[in-house]
Structure formats: structure tokens, C-alpha cells
Amino acid sequence: MFRSAHVLTRLSVGVTALSLWLAGGSLAAQSASGDSSRATITGLAFDSLSSKPLAHALVQLVSEGGDGTVRSATSDSDGAFRIPGVPRGRYSLGFMHLELDSLGFALPPRAVTVASDSLPFIVLAIPSASSIRARLCPSRPPADSTGVMLGFVRDADSGAPMAGAAVVAMWIELAADSAQRLRIQRRQLPARSDSTGWYALCGIPSVAPITVRAESQTSVTGYVEATVAPRGLTHRDFFVPTGTAAVAVLDSAARATADPVRHGTARVAGVVRNENGQPMSGVKLRVWGTNASGATASDGSFMLSGLPAGSETLEARYVGYAPMHVSVDLASDTTRNVAVTLNEHTNVLEPITVYGKQSAFARDLTGFYQRRREGWGRFITRAQIEERSALQFTDLVNATPGIRVVPTGGTGYSVVSSTNQACRPDIYLDGTRLQDPDNVNDVILPDNVYGIEVYGTTTETPPQFRQGKGGCGSVVVWTNPALGPLGKN
Image (cartoon, rainbow, N blue to C red):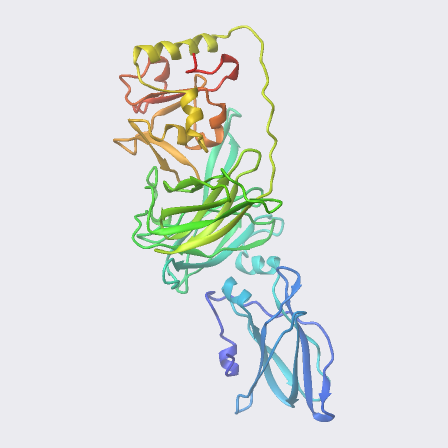
């Protein structure tokens, strides 16, 4: 509550040295009850971020006289407010709203002088995204199209602000090297939360969704997706669990190659529906970075348990629909209910028949059968692939002896040695070694896979699959549909 002028000049909820002045317009005030010594102050509370009136804003007028009298009003559904019976004098006028609290800052008050029954109409506004961006990110050039993400980092169970936490945004860019070959580059943008748990990230790219996580010295959230409009602003709070081992990105020059699979006592439940509101059965669900997965029942319902507390991402997949990613904030020993709607259709291509001469690739694939008969390594056939109904490629090899599937420093998973997590087998796709195996799920789709060979050590790996220098074995994937269904003959 506004209690005095000097208190009003230093209101801050989570932002250090941030002052965003209220915008003003012009209206007129009228005398109250015919008393020319008193005035009625009218105005409008407005949210410039959404370009809508701000309902339920608490507007307060504080006398700068010795009594410190406070007069209050609440804006209506149209954002309008009215404070009648205001005596002549000097005042400070300001407002509070949950939207301001969630963004993490309070606005300084405006000085108002009531000298007669005629006053300017006052617009109390949450600044626009461009104004906030200009204040928070003064070093960004005007033509820069990047945006801002801000919010609070809190304890997942108590909700208490978490100071000194790292919030890291991550994305992938394509860049050409000196030989004009395209390579994937990983980008990271970190920030620290202040003493109130507030953080702000400048320079967020706007061309595609990014993934973000928050970390303390001993705890880590899951990865969540976020999209920021060009020169825009996105608000996202993060809830960090306790007791989960993590390496803070800001303090480590060389991060571990993969994160541990997280688990806990939280649960998420809900119903998946289509765009018409009808329940969908058989929708596959998983929570990123955990072993929790399942499918919806005939009524569209689901329940996933054994989850870590904190901010996580629930993924829903169904044939013919684009995957849906839902951010959920979980707490220990608590079930979080969510409603998931799949409404974006994707094209499902009809099967085609390819005619042509047998290539060197096809002749080499004949070795799949021969190596399988001779027992060189471990093999996953097309029949086994269909039985597993995998959501992504790493689901196909997750249970194979000699290797493990672990979360990467993004939203996907990586294949590593079961005995040495820092040791990664080479991955071959149709005879060619992948340069960036961390993105294997983006490159290989389960429905396109016709056979997989897994070799846990270099000594058992056939010579043609030893191009890498890691000495950790190889995973060989075959996808050419013209070669027929492997394992069914």
C-alpha cells in the first residue's frame, strides 16, 4: 500500500535500478458534489503489452501533506477508475497490479497537484514491450529484432524466491564454415537471478522457439520451450526443485556431456482432446529429461508419476498431428492437472514405390543380414521397431545392452556408453557417419527406420563403421524403404 511520498519513489519488486515512468494523456476532472474546493480524479489503467484496458488495478492517491491520507480506487473491466472528493493539495498517484508483480517491477508514482476542479485525465500504463526492452537492454541497436525474456526463479515446493540462480536460454543455428559446409552451432545465453529471484535475458532470437532452463548450485529444472516475438517480451517464471544434481552453466566452462535422468514424487494428470473437444485415446506422452512416458486411455485421460518437482515440459504426440509441448510447474507429492489440445494437423504422406537398379548402398545393406547371422553385434529389426511404437529414435535403442540414452543439453537425448557416460558411440545413417549425434532425434524418425545395428566396443565393430576416433563403438541405422522390411524375411 502507498503510505508516503518517499516510499512511493522507491518501490521495487525484483528489479534493481529500473525506472519506467507512467505514460500520461489528457482528460478532465470535475468538481465533487458542487464543492469547487474538491475534485474528482478520473483516468484509465492500460496494459501496453497486450494493448488492452487493465481491469482490477489498485489506484492510490497519497497526500504529500503531513497526514499522508490515502485515497484508493479499483479500475473496472474497461480500465476506468474514479477518485472523488479530493481536496486541493499535492499528491502522488500510482497503481499496482498482478501483471506488474509478475513482470517484476513497480512503476514510480506521478506527482499530481489539485489546485481547482479541473485536472488532466491520467493514463496509468504498463509500458510497451519496446519500451521495456529499451530500458533493460540499452546496448541493443534499434534495428535489432531480438526480444526479452524475464520473470522470477522460485523454489518448486515453497515458492520462495531463489537468488543467484542461472537461467540459460539455448538454441541452434546453422552456420557455414570456410568450406561452405553447413554445420549446427549451439548457442547459450545466461543470466543470474537477483536477490528477489528476478532475472532478465536480452538478445533472445525470434526466428524459432528456444529452450530455457533454470539452475541453482544443486538443483535444475527441465527444459521448457519459449517463443519471443521480434522486439517483443515474454514472461516466464521457473520453479527449481531441491536435491537434483546439476552443474551451473555460468560457473562451468566445460559442461558435462549429458544430464542425469531426473525423477521424484510429483505427478501430472489430465485429458488430451482434439480441436473439436473430443477425447483422444492412444496419444503418446512423455516428460522431457525423465523416464516417465505413457499413453492416453479410451477417455483421453492419462497419469504420469515419478516426476521431479519444478518446471518441466510435457510432450504429446499422435499420428497426423504436430507434437504439442505443454509447460508444467510440478511440486513434490502433488498431482498437477493439465488440459492438452492437439489442433495442428500435419500431412501424412502416402507410401510410394521406388524402382531402380541396386546401388552400392543396397549391396552393403545385404551385410545387415550377414552380420546378424554371424552375431557381430546386436540387431533391431523392423518387426521389433514396429512393436516398440517409439516416439523418437532414441526410444528404439534405449533398452539395448551396452548403451544408454541420456538427456542432452537441450530438449533431446543422446546415445552414450552404459559403462562410461562420457563415451559416445558413432552413429551411422545409411552408411554415413553423423557429424552431430546429439541431434539424432531431429535427423532420424522411427517410422523411417528399417533396421539398427549396435556395436558396444571398437573391437566388435566392423571396419567400415570405425571412421570415428572415439573408440566407443557404433550405432548403424538403415532407412532406405526401397530395400524392403528388414527382419520379416
